[in-house]
Image (cartoon, rainbow, N blue to C red; front, side, top):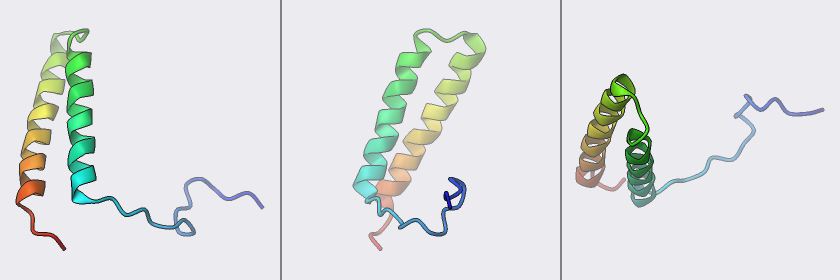
Length: 67
């Protein structure tokens, strides 16, 4: 029987380190900056706001104690 791709219960959990999460967020910011070059006014504003939230998220992750 084929597993439903939406069924995550049987999948092993992948551990992502804080450093990897920060790097992924920075990668997303860089990709958004590239998209900004081609974005219209409304999308540009949306991407700028999103990157601002990402900056704050990175700061929170850096200040978060290791668990």
